[in-house]
Length: 125
Image (cartoon, rainbow, N blue to C red; front, side, top):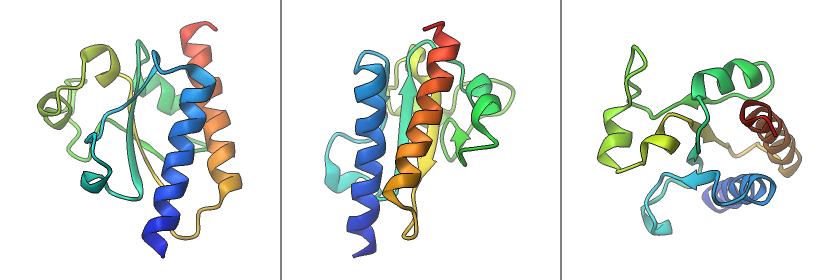
């Protein structure tokens, strides 16, 4: 039950981001097969965006992290993102977002709006 709920929320988050920014800007960095994805975690790359700057703009409103669970230090790309063949223009703008059993649709929609606003600001749109 919880896994289905979290998968629904994660999918909505991704759909909201793509709908607002376009599939040319937003990339799901995870496996293509849903059976190989975690139900609660979304690794999403934003083309030509810097994740560090993005985090600074949203960190007070959205709980997330840059890169991958095995994030590299010193500004280097995560070895995990490199191994996943994430293109550089998306890897540098990657956020890792998670939802939980108590996360609501409203919270997902609000987080989406905040992220979209910060990405647009960084892209000058």
